[in-house]
Length: 166
Length: 83
Length: 85
Image 1 (cartoon, rainbow over the protein chains, first blue to last red):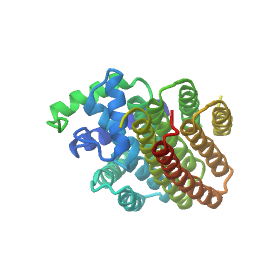
Image 2 (cartoon, rainbow over the protein chains, first blue to last red):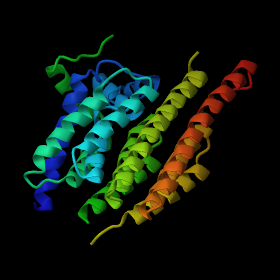
Image 3 (tube, rainbow over the protein chains, first blue to last red):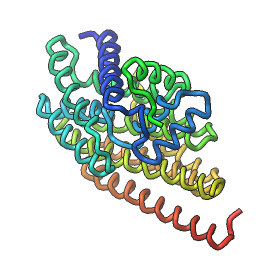
């Protein structure tokens, strides 16, 4: 498929996958580790939303659905089939154990994006477009302007009923 | 290929932004985007199972390293300003 | 026009080294050291030496973690003795 059409579609699918699964797993509610709390408070001090700040902090400090999406896309591309996604889910599970994080956001994200890539590859969007897509998606959340993106995450978290736990 | 161009531009923009900002905790998300970019390039240039495994090893270790840096930044802030 | 990743990795390494020289506090120097390590690992992997990249990524990040633990201990001992500030 033409790259100019395929890369934005893959970026949108990767963005939706990791944001929805992370918010559903409760990432904006509480910081998992101490570094995430520091990053969240820093984003709030600069004018952002605290839930969105904890979301960004949890993405930086421990493997979550964004890591699962990236590693599952890389594995799917490297192994040439869906078995790569399962191997990536195993690695993300080991990474979660190393960070002492009891959540399963990473493995869930890896398995769902494997399914999405398997379906999209029948339409011509191969796995390498998803690799570029997840990098573009994480740039929009963490690289452009933190207060605005954290407010967007806070609004989506409010709609899915995941408020900050005091 | 266009994928390599896009990721190279993103990495160069992030590293220049990281060099310019003064706030330590604002630099951590930029470092995370750089980790994503490097992990993606390792697989894109070596499309084989070993490339995928190298990318996975690099990314998990880089996330644990960024966790250590963020923890230390918060501890240094607490030791110097709080307590 | 294709911008190869080798140029981005070279900029990563140069900015990491310059940042490590120009920053004054140790904690900022370690962040720039992480950027330098990223650039080095990526350029080794781009040229095809994947096992070297895996080994050097292991050593770089375990080294950063151990240095962080050491930095926190040094600062706590200095504060306890009253030499801080």
